[in-house]
Length: 99
Image 1: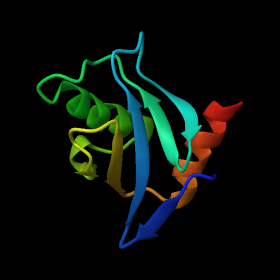
Image 2: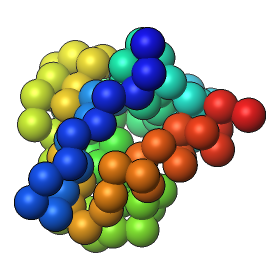
Image 3: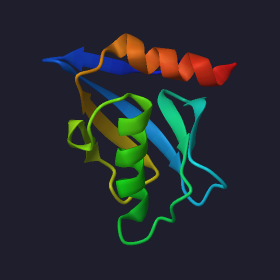
Image 4: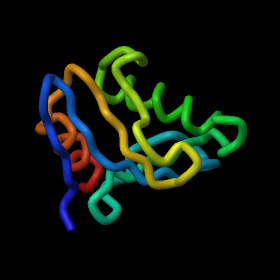
């Protein structure tokens, strides 16, 4: 199943599958229709969510305030929204890591 990304009003939304407590934070490809991200942060007291926002801001070269978790704050499966990027940018990141 390909990565599903929706774009509109200068922002994109897509699903992210998070693996907390990894040895390092990295994008590792696609899991189902979601971007799979390993995070070194533990899933305790919102640490993994904060790390995800910071990591995605770095990956897509936007500010942390441009990244929001819309759903799944207590789950490994999340829906995120990022402003000031395009659908193509998300697919480029997924394709770069799939190789």
